Amino acid sequence: MELSGSDIENLVKAIVSAYPSKDDLDMMIVYGFGVDEALSKITGGNNLKKIVFNLVTKWAIPQGKIEQLIEQAYKCNSDNPELKKIYQNFCQKLKPSVFNIMGFSEDECLPIYIPEWNELYLILKQINNNQLITQVCKQTLKNSQNDLLGNCLELSNKIDLKNLKEILLNKFPKRDDNVPTILEFAERLSSEVQGKLSAQLEQWIINLATRLEIDLPTYSKPSSKNDIYKYFLLIAVIPQGKNQFELQSDLLLYNCSKDSYETNPKFLDCEKRGSIRCDLTEIKDKISDLIAICQEYLQLPYILNVELFLTYRYLGYAFDLEEVVIDKERNTAHYLGIEYPLLVSSYERFHDRKLYNEFLVRWRTKVQQKLKLNFAKLIESFQELKSEVYNNRSLDELENQWKVEKIIGLKIIGCWSKEEKVQEELFYSLVRSGIPFALWSRCNDLQNCQQDLNNLLTSQPLQNWHDLFEKVWECRQKAYKKPEKIGYHLGILSDDPQRIPSNLKPLIETGK
Image (cartoon, rainbow, N blue to C red):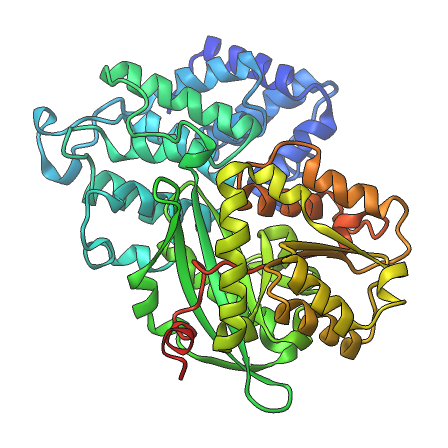
């Protein structure tokens, strides 16, 4: 790439404007070219303008790195108007020819210019999330390819930007309606990132769509919260002797229009999700593995709820505070209850036909009636279990009372025991009484615990169970590493006859 004297002058002015101190300039160079190319090693000068002039004329141009320097300077400060103008002019000087995709002539395929790809490439490098890019690429191609993985084996693993270019510009350059797949991909990706990167993507989309005279959006975007796909990863944690467990999983999609749940048959057929054996300390890692497997089958945009079916002994276990790996490449982990809406359900309730019957009668005579009237009223009917009641009455008495009064939900406040045996007995009575729902705090010493728990349920109108699950999730996120907040200690049990693991259904349907 050849630069005229005025080009060099404008470039020097733009870089000085974008990097007004020597430290800023040095960081940009090191980030782009490494410590061996630090400013002090490659150029000198009495002032910043002279240093930048030497950087351009005595290093970048002689070593053939001028294109890289312009790209790196723009990538690190794309908001600077002078630098942006330089970069756009630079893109136009690169071969402005059309990609001749798969050997087609110009009139046989929709064009995308090399500078347009270069600009998108720089944005994608800043996003730096191959897992997200792979997921969005799959979703982009999903509707047009019946056998997506069969036709594009690269998508069976995380793809890099080189593979992305091959897939979207060579293998599948356009949809049936002649819209470039890269355009839909960028649209979908823009809704998954935030801040400056989202704005850059949106501008790139507008520029390309304007040039090609394509109306936006190019696909049906969710118009409301109800259009977000709500998935439930059901994991039955089945005891197999002392401290040994078997994990069996299902993936359900909530159908809002029918108010029902649909099983994903492809996930059921996936060999990786088969019976998994582990001990208690390994459960969190196996849950993380199952989450990674099921994400291959999720349609964007989605919320993935994780529902653990546990025995009485483990219903009070703080799985929400277990750290799970969220990015193996970066080796980063996060609390399970922070990363996903997490709830627990009673394994025995769906394993024992008598217990299931007690629960089902309560559900159909009480829960469904209130749901038809007003979900918020249903939540308000939850009964509080406080220490003064819990400590002065036996669990047998309480269980009988809950049965007679047909309690729908419990708020357990100030009477949580750290002893596993005592927790187990409480949940045993709760499940036997037919109560389908419970909220509790694992800390009895929190200030305003009762008020905070009530505010969680009533501070804003809740329309359905999913709103409540997301509210609990939000409460946990706000309490991240803040033990003084109720969200850090919050537990939630929610049993629903429509959400039952497939391995438990035969037991309650046949009684065997």
